[in-house]
Image 1 (spheres, rainbow, N blue to C red):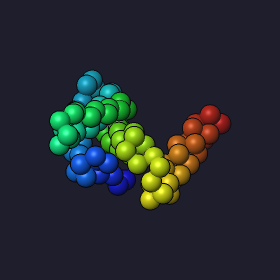
Image 2: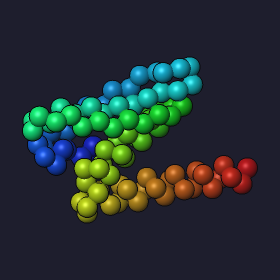
Image 3: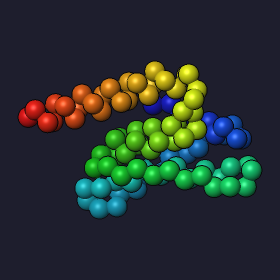
Image 4: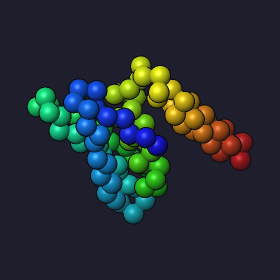
Length: 91
């Protein structure tokens, strides 16, 4: 998934993942903006890839929610989540 740049300074933030417990991974975006503020997003999941996708989604929602370039990726992400949850509910 594409990480959108910060809407204030244009830099693309880095993602840090670390394992909290055996079954829990936390993905973190901590962006030190050139305007002097720190912007922080985090997402917890059992899988490192899922945690990474979750934190990217949260960052993109905050930074590019009104950007039409983000809409197809947002639709794909939400559609996949919905299909997964529906499949799990019927099993």
